[in-house]
Each structure stands twice: as structure tokens, then as C-alpha cells.
Length: 266
Image 1 (cartoon, rainbow, N blue to C red):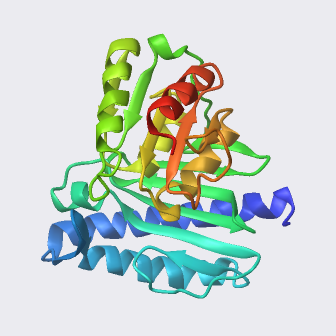
Image 2: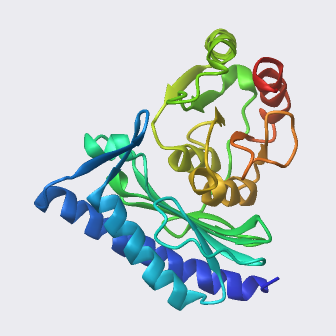
């Protein structure tokens, strides 16, 4: 695997690219007519999503050309056996359509399926979250760390199911428990931002199912490098491609993971 110093350099380059692209996306959102297509039930893509992904793909292949791509809108589909860029050009597209932050650019570099560089640029607040394996996590260049509150005092973030309702009843029951036993529950509409907020201590835990790799890959690096824990609903490590995720601070994690597993683990 690439040494830490090279990962740091790559992370810095990707961070600059994410912010530059995000600022261009915001400019286009204000000046260009928004064209919205439907990919599935409650699943949208805009002409600006496609612009963002095309720009990112073009520039990322210059930063580390050996890597393949896993990109939401399919601009590039050539995966590598070792390194891959995992890209969400606008995470929170529904928010973006309504110009209701948060919405974010999410970019990860993964090695054999494990994300080792993570960048999330939340455009609404001009906040750049960066992390690389062994290097810590940062917000606009300043170190960040997860909060260390127990679940009873913690704020929980989640995402509502939008087209897979197979576990909806159990999900509602998990919400009922958390509403009664945590400090509060929030739904922001951008999983990448949710994970970034766990990393910087704004929320203490996050869970959601039916997610894709590009929704979570970058955020997982942020959480783990900020001192948190990430798992699937059973407490295992299939959270990048397994379509379900639990993330929390070390103090909140044991109880939180147990609760999510009780209600939602298959």
C-alpha cells in the first residue's frame, strides 16, 4: 500500500479539487437551468451532478492514474484490483435540487476495497473534511475528533429509507427507541455529511441502510481517523459494499451498535 506521506499528498490534492469543483457546482446551481432526471423511486440526478462527476474523474486520474473508478453516475466504470477512486459528485441530490444544505462532494481512494483517503466537501457551509490512513482527520486543516458522550446524552443522525422499504417497520421501531433513549435524532439528507459530523463531534452516532459505496467510503475514513468506530449492522466490516452502516464515537458505539443490530440486522 502507498506510504503515509504519499497518502497525505494525495489527500491534499483531492481536497483542493473537491473545493474547486464544489464552488463551481454552486455557481452553476445559481446560473444554469437545473435539469432533473429520475433514476428510480425517489432517486434523482441533475445535469450538475453529471458535470461534477465528469470534472472529478478527469482530474483524479491525473492525481493517481493507476486507480480505477467506482462513480455514482457511471462516468467511468473501469475498476482496478488494487486502487479505486470512489466518487459521489453530489451526495444529497434531493437537498441540492431544493437548494437545502447539506449537500457534499465525497471522494475516497480505496485499496483492495478499503478506503484509505477520504475527502468530503460540504458545499453549503464551505467545509472541507479530509483524512488519510494513519494521518488523522481534519476540518479546513484543523484536527478533529469524535465526541465522547454516552448514547443517552448523544445526538443521533440517520437517513430515511427512500426506495427499499423492506425493513421499514423495524427501522421505525429503532427510531422509537432512540427518540426515547438518546438526546435527539436528526435527518440531514446526506450520508457523507452525517459521517463527517460524527468525525467532528457534531453528532455522536449515525446509521442507515440501502447505501452505496460512494455514499459512505470517504466518511468512513473521517470517522475512524477521528477516533470513532464503523461497522455494519451486525458489528462486522461489510459496511462499504454491504449497504448498511453504523458509525459512532467509542463511548456511544457499544450500546448504539447493539440497538441497531437488535432492530435491523438481518
